[in-house]
Amino acid sequence: MSLAGKHIVLGITGSIAAYKSATLTRLLIKKGAEVQIVITPAGKEFITPITLSALTGKPVISEFFAAGDGTWHSHVDLGLWADLMIVAPATASTIGKMAHGIADNMLITTYLSMKAPVFVAPAMDLDMYRHISTQRNIEILRKDGVQLIDPAEGELASHLEGKGRMEEPENIVAVLEQFFATPNDLTHQNILITAGPTYERIDPVRFIGNFSSGKMGFALAVECASRGAEVLLITGPTALSASHPNIRRVDVESAREMFDIAVKAFPGMDAAILSAAVADYRPQQTVAEKIKRNEQEQITLTLTPNPDIAATLGKMKKPGQKIIGFALETNDEESHAIKKLEKKNFDYIVLNSLQDKGAGFGHDTNKVTMLSRSGMKLSFELKTKKEVAKDIVDIAFGSSSNRFT
Ligand code: CTP
View 1 (cartoon, rainbow, N blue to C red):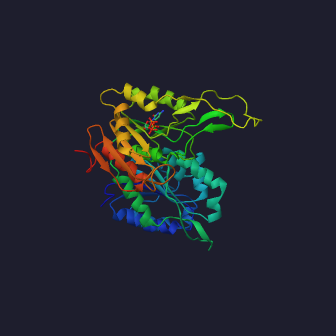
View 2 (view 1 turned 180 degrees about the vertical axis):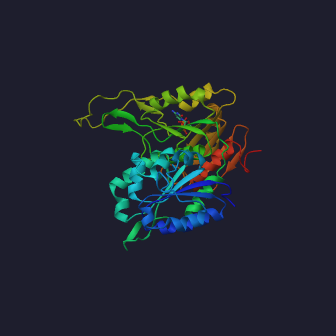
View 3 (view 1 turned 90 degrees about the horizontal axis):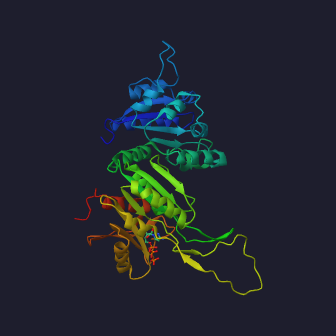
């Protein structure tokens, strides 16, 4: 029983999909979880507390006070009791209240008192789901570290087809099982991660950059955070959001900004994972006004080297700290990667070659080879960046069956 002994608070809100919550409850209990249901007043219009309490063997909580004897239902106690909270189905209204802390019902007060990770499975009509206001609120929740279980495509209660159907209970349970199956082996580790590109300003409207999307670095941040680490994610410009409460994100633009923050933070870290595609050079001067087209056929930019963050951290490294670097190569990949591993004093280097289809910048997949200081080499298949992040962390932090021996 994969959820044996887990305390789960299941929040139910006023959506047609509330009927699926009965199945969800039953499946959670079958997997060994203890379930406490908190339902909104609108939720009770769609499914009766009697059905739900029969399944959980506990009273369903809805009001702040029990009607009969005036006993207070403590959302604070629930926040401490829970190993996980899931709101399924979550309406646009509840998502909005969660995003803005509008604590006008028991479910929202419970959410605001929650010490455990929170998952949300939205359910609504496709236009409501697509609406800029809903999307904005979902984004706020993601940034707050709430984990979204995206709605599926399909026929909706309005008989329209589209995205908005609550994910099926079986799939929700699979997500929760996966969550609990993730090892907690990085608790008490402080990990610095650099991600994304850097932009080096030419003038107020132009910059030198690169095609890095930041996806690999963000996947690593989520993997480390999910395994209990406190992550400092220093990222160059990217549209990505990092959704985990253990991730502290600092946005930077240039290599020098990234350098300053990384160098200051590194002494307090157990490890650094340097996945950013840092620009090696920047324009020697940033022109204060926009460079105008003029009669000259050509203009010349003089570039000056940026500081090497990786090499600097490599020099600062103390016993007990480890550094995992990256190398993106186009030719003589392995020998270049080994040289970098040694020159920058890395413990491991993750090599991806632009020769490999589906690997490198922008893709959701990557194909890497990991090399260690002790001369070991492990090559992986093409995988999603999430899976690659798991492999890298398994190897570098030594909790893997395929770790170097
Ligand atoms: N790196 C860094 N700071 C830089 C340049 C690179 O921290 N100014 C890090 C990258 O994040 C990566 C590793 O160093 O972990 C190797 O980066 P890469 O660009 O492959 O190597 P470079 O040293 O820039 O060498 P080259 O561009 O000549 O291949």
